[in-house]
Length: 335
Ligand code: HEM
Image 1 (tube, rainbow, N blue to C red):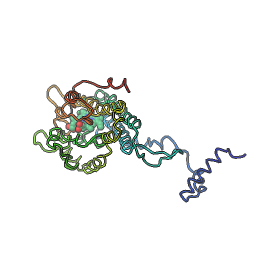
Image 2 (cartoon, rainbow, N blue to C red):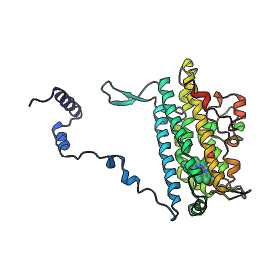
Image 3 (cartoon, rainbow, N blue to C red):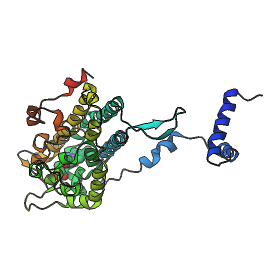
Image 4 (cartoon, protein in one colour):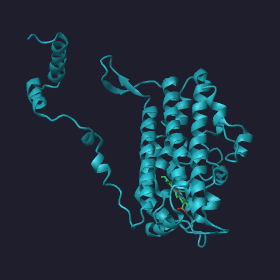
């Protein structure tokens, strides 16, 4: 039987592809004849994935706690995958569909679409956070958490990487320290010493850094500084400013950025705070948080005032940051 003309063409293309690399297509065809068919379980690595839950106690609800953190970290990884693409202007494809590197120039449509992907990931996380708030027995939680000290979600490196990729590093400096820099922004290394999250990891009694923070800095400090230096010109704000004046006025672009600010800096933190209140607040007396910090004063967005794009908000909106006005419906309509 004569070979299908399409198959013949494909073989020719393959010959070209392997030839360009000095490879003999026949050896590769032998390999194809011998290799197994791909399966779902191998590709998705299901079995490995399901070995990654290792509780410290026998309380069944500890499984929920571990898996929900893992789910969150996977969403964070999805977000970082988008940040990398935006930072590099998006994938450059040849007409034959092969990716050949990154584009020279960022397109506003691509920018807004990818920022909205990140928005969807955070919306999914915010919606599903009820799993933490109402989905575990308080009795069990309060017991197994004692076996997890001094670990804390505070030590999520991907969460901090998302912030570093989103904004000018200056905006992540403790809000009380920022004014002391006046117009002169010091190098990243210097600003890192006053990163906002130090406030959430200072022992109430002694004013010293908590063990949770010391371990976090030891493991990731250098990596954060390196990433921040790399993203000086690649963070979302820098990429936005690289667009033409007209594109910067595009409402779709502006709304995508404002939404990400609300999603990451208000909506998710509020849900997360709700879980802390639910589990760690007993009557008026609070149970000391995992890291031994004053989390009630630290976690609420209205105290932190972490804002990625202050230039996009009015003075009043910044003043009211996290105070209950919820912006979602403002944007959804005119997207
Ligand atoms: C019952 C569920 C949870 C409770 C009670 C809780 C409680 C807390 C508390 C008290 C803090 C303040 C730092 C400390 O004292 O340790 C904190 C920080 C943090 N947690 Fe959770 N958490 C929960 C679930 C999660 C989940 C599922 C994640 C997802 C990764 C997460 C990520 C974080 C992050 C990123 C911080 C740092 C926030 C910041 O610096 O603004 N937490 N958490």
